Amino acid sequence: MQYKRVLHSFLTASLAATLGLGCSALTDISSPVVSKTDTVKTPQLNLVPGSILVMRQGFAGIAGSLADKLGFGGGEGTRVIVIKRFAPGYTADIEWKLTTKVKKLTPKDSDLRQFSGSLSGVDLLRTHKLYLPGYWQEGEHGAFGTSALWVSEIVFEDLTKLKNTTLNFGILDQELYAGLKIAEDLKPVLRKLNVNIDLIGAHTDVYFMTAEPELTDWKLVVNGKTVTVQVIKARNWFGEIVVLNNKQNPLVLKVTLNPVGSNFLKNGLGYEITELRDVSN
Image (tube, rainbow, N blue to C red):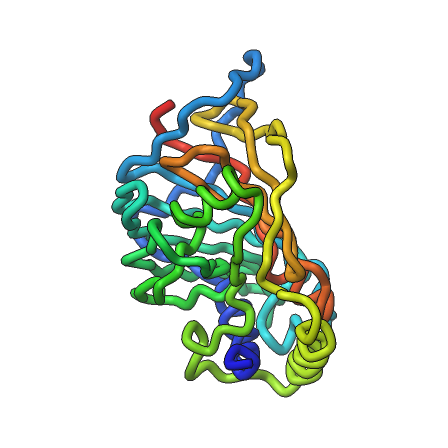
């Protein structure tokens, strides 16, 4: 399988991403006060330039010694994503900033690290491939033919009408991670994942995804208020996604990976979008 060699490079990217941020538009990541008002059901949640997504990424599952070598602490990071361009069913551009705790080298050091980057040309039309934020690299990059944080229009149509599709989480995608270096500590993780793919792949399409038959209510903070939205839950061998039931904005609100190689994959690459700001609803 052509994807196997990719995983070899994923780890540095996922770890590099856990540390990142910069960009003037992303300087304020403090959460607003959430009001106690009644929940509002199924708002439109239309994204516009300047809309902000707040994401939680966890790293508690990384072993302490490995986390130290890679520069991470054992807590979770907060990633703030700013929409720069959003054309539903066509494309999007985003900027991001990630803050996470790290081990202090001296008492005077800060225990927070920030990195930043951007993605342009996100494919919101036809791709069947995600680009997990844990793999995003610092600096300016294209989206490599992926839908990044959304499912594409064709995948959304499949999930809503057929209740199945194919979706590649990108974990083994060499195109996304070519040129990245891999720590020696990660090689056993990658070998184990490759063995699992070999064993399962002979009789299972690991990319085939099925959706639950009914929509599910989901709580989300939108413009400072807790609202109830409807989502599609779908899963394949790699894990589960929670997708906003909105054709114009099929945002992947949560990714939960199965521990197919180790808990590092599950805890280091999973995420949840907990808040949307400055959206039209």
